[in-house]
Length: 144
Image 1 (cartoon, rainbow, N blue to C red):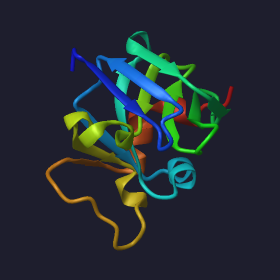
Image 2 (cartoon, helix red, strand yellow):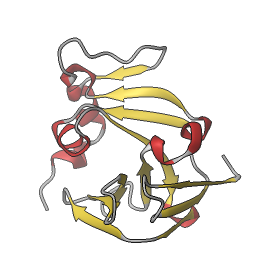
Image 3 (tube, rainbow, N blue to C red):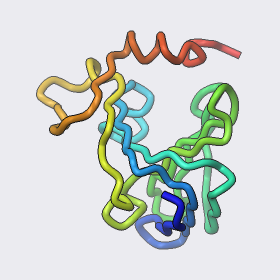
């Protein structure tokens, strides 16, 4: 999307404006995303240059290449941002921050084979296994 999209956390203390928000949603069942989100984590990518954020944000460096952020007032999860590695500067915003997920649609599920038993996201989208995803993204297993 080339238009500006705005969103906010549950309490409204954190306001987000994004230009260049993707129209695709990715879902992830890796153990880190599952522990952080409490379930499958979904994200909509945006380039760092198009992002403006205001409000009380806290971050946690969850791996050598990424950080996760939340509202310090209400605790709403906000994003995963790549701060090192091949995708530096890319945000993955949680779709619920934007009205109707900004019109984005689910296009892929990664770590699909790690989803809890009986859990499946319906629809026509790519389902990528842990082995396949880690082979395509070798930096995930690097320790720096």
